[in-house]
Image (cartoon, rainbow, N blue to C red; front, top):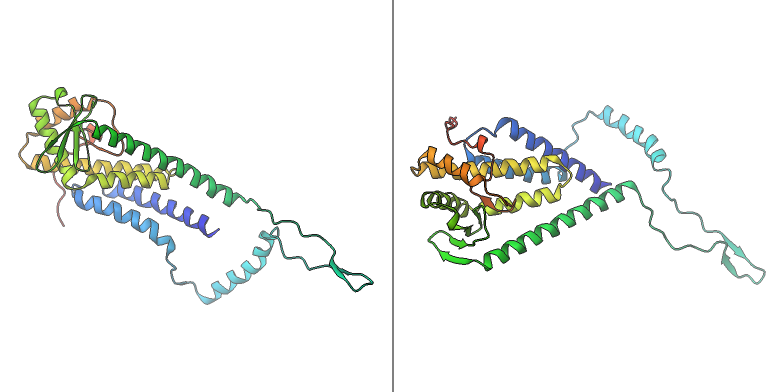
Amino acid sequence: METLRYVVLVNALLAVISFAYYVLLRRETFFRTNRLVLWLGILATLLLPLLELPDWRPQPVRTVMHRTAQVFVPKILSDVDTPKPEVTITFPNRGTYPAFQHQAATVKWSWPMVFLLMYAAVGLVLFIRLGVQLISLGRLIRQSVHEPYEDFTLVRNDAVTSPFSFFNWVVLNPDRHTSDELEQILRHERVHVREQHSLDMLGAELVCILFWFNPAAYLFRHLLHQTLEFSADQTVLAEGVDARAYQYNLVKVSLSAGQSTVTNHFSKSQLNSRMLNKSASEKC
């Protein structure tokens, strides 16, 4: 029951934190801070239910609740097996034998146990699927042509329709892009590589696996992806890239298909929400 209580509390906290960020912070342009806030929220979600907070209730209230629990808990748990007294039979030869043969203990299934088993089973399936995706991604990178750069390794593959980065690799098909597009794509993906955004992407996938039935987990992943893309856009534009040309290339590349949730894509987040023309948030 304690495990079920923890699962319920963690999912409730995740919903509160995700929707609070969506309402209060998603339009702020302090993207590195926003990234940190999102992960601190996940950390708080996992740790807060484990803390034992002091009981601030007045003594009379605690006394009444304790007496109420003594009355109702035995009724709720009345179906729990209680140990039965041992019954024996003594024969004339003074031999003593048990009156009833003990049956082998059987596992009693309860709805909390079934729920937790189903929860874990679905999570395991999703984790295996993530592993398969990573193996396929690794195979794609190994079978491609590698070109080392100062900050990353360019991976050329004719089968790639949409450019993306994953850890130190930037994967694309150069034949699908003009020289100006390639320059802006590499500037953008270089930010993802330099700031280790792939760790965030994998972490977001693990959050969705851990809280697979909670819509707030997918909202968290969406918000984190947006924050990473906005951060990369902000850095690229700060380098002097023309905002209009950059937006045009985003639209053009966004028409490509085959985007994965574990990689950083040049055109990943929704174009109508990219903050290319938004003024920076004011510092306090």
